[in-house]
Image (cartoon, rainbow, N blue to C red; front, side, top):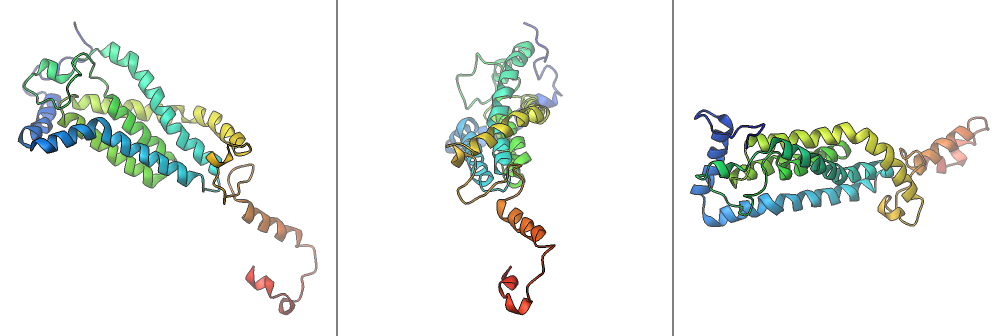
Length: 250
């Protein structure tokens, strides 16, 4: 059956297949335990690492002065991944690209059981990059760490022989587009939701106990109180500085 993406490797100089074989060829020279480790990492390990980064981002977001907004941004990460995966369903059917080892049995396949699934785009790559981009919008350090894991995910998918490089790139592009293009709509819904939760019994899910948040969600209550106190005192006589040592502490 014809596909929108021709089978990579139809020509001897195909860079898509050439890069895949170069990376997958490393598996043939690696010890068995390393192949098993990379296979587990490619299927589960990196996703677990990204989940841990997402949990860390949530814990950090709860302690920010703009906690409801930050938590809304963290919540967008898994939702964006779900949207990207749904968008990939018609894309994969339309492209209808078989796994690379179907056309090229010489590849060393380390993850069995994928013969009847489609190759474009890479779900694992889309999930990884979707989380990375969404976290970067909230916390740059955690987003960069997640981005490194997403790149490692792409390498691992080639190493185990289940995707072409263009499958991985397509997954990255799809996830990035979903996160960035739909973020304004998502935040328009999630931010009011998180503000509402912060005023309910579920407040600990949004705001840490020691953090005070203004209705606008941008500044903590303590600095606001100090600014308000200064405004109220502008028109009043100021006490003698020598008689008010507490002013020095302020």
